[in-house]
Each structure stands twice: as structure tokens, then as C-alpha cells.
Length: 278
Image 1 (cartoon, one colour):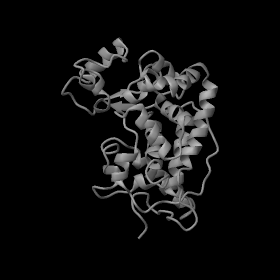
Image 2: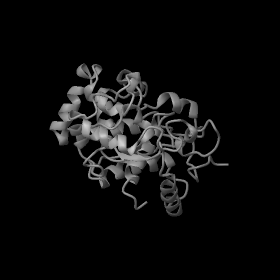
Image 3: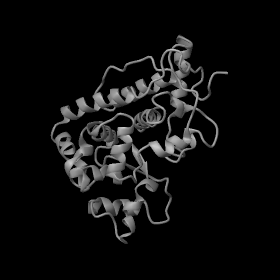
């Protein structure tokens, strides 16, 4: 919990929760090969469950059965951004917890670092998020780390070309080839926002302008052909104007936090975030 990286991990948990059956805490449920924790985008990757458990037990001891795990994730994501130097916003509350964790849906619905820009845009549109949301929420990669397995496809033989991704800046390419050699350990991590790894700022967008996005799904927001008429102008705007980025990011986080919430008698208030109530 005292680890600098944890803010990014909690932010990602919220994102991966909301894209699968809405923001219902379903990513926190243990068990089963078809649970969200076992899905490809999450297994050996999402983290911070122990921190959520600690928050939940503290909240339960103060007011039992009132605050959902879904709301805890939403507030933790906001506070992680704020404590990392980013904006704050008012979090609408009252989500209830889902009782189903759907790993199959997680595999198809969550954006992947290997997706084309068109695919990413359509996955966001499927949950009611638009072009501005895609670019602003991608900027969450101003903090955190990623595993070699998620970007090493760019380093040696990109898309079957026999050579590295030409949109990757050459000094960074060499550093990453040394960090992630062919047939090396795919779980070694690199910072997502080179030269500003732990501060929530607009430096992520500055990196995209100079070919220093870590994931393919980061760099295509600026460098792909499809970006010219879609995401590229926003990347340039956020590079130029930090306060514009912070405002748009806060608005997009509120929108994402409102994806298909369970309210009223739908769902439950879980006693333990890892299991449904018996």
C-alpha cells in the first residue's frame, strides 16, 4: 500500500471492472476459470486486491453493509489520480455489487495493447464512451508500468516485418530491447511514461509526439493513419494544454464510472469483495 505504483494499479482495476458488465466490482470476485481475474487481460497482471480488502474491512468496521466494493474501487481510482498529482472530481455514489464475474466478456470487451485504433474506438463506443474519452483515459498511462509481454511485439519483428516498429524512438527502442530481450522474461516491467513515471501529468502526450509511447495502443493514438482524422488532434491539444487534459480526464472518469451501475434492488452490498454474500 506504500508502493508508488499502487495508484496506477487501483486506477486500472476500476477501468477493467467498468468495461465488463459495468462498474459492479465483478473484477474483485475470486474463483473459476471463467472469472474476470482469470481472463487474459487480467491474469498475472491486475493487482491491488489486497489494498481493496484493507479499505473494505476498514469501511465495514465503521458502517457495515453500506458501501459497495464497486464504490470503493471508484473512489480509490479518483484518489489514486489526485495523490499522484492529477485532478480531482466528485464521484457519484450508490453503485451496488454484481454477483457474476464474466471472464469471457472480459476477453472480448477490454481494449488490448495489440488492438488497432478502430477496434479500440469501437470497444469504447460499446460502453458509451467517445473519441475524447479514448484519448483522455489513455492518458492514465502517465503513471504505472507494463510488462514486456505487452510491448515486446514492437521491439524486433513488428507485425511480421522482420524489424522493429518504426514509430518507436530509437534510443527508447535500444533501452527496451536490452530490458526485454527475445525469449526473455515477459513479466519484467517498464514505466509507461518515460521520464515522468510517477507523476500524473500530460507528459504521456509529449511522449507520443516524439515516438515514446510504450504500448502500440498508446503510440497509434498519434502515429497511425487512422489517428489523423480521429485521435491525433486531441493528443496535440493535451500536449499543449494540461488543464484541458485534466478537465477532460475528470469528465471521462465520471462517465466511465457511470457505465451500467447496479442500483435499487439490483446486486448487493458485498461483505467481502472477493465473494458474493451467502
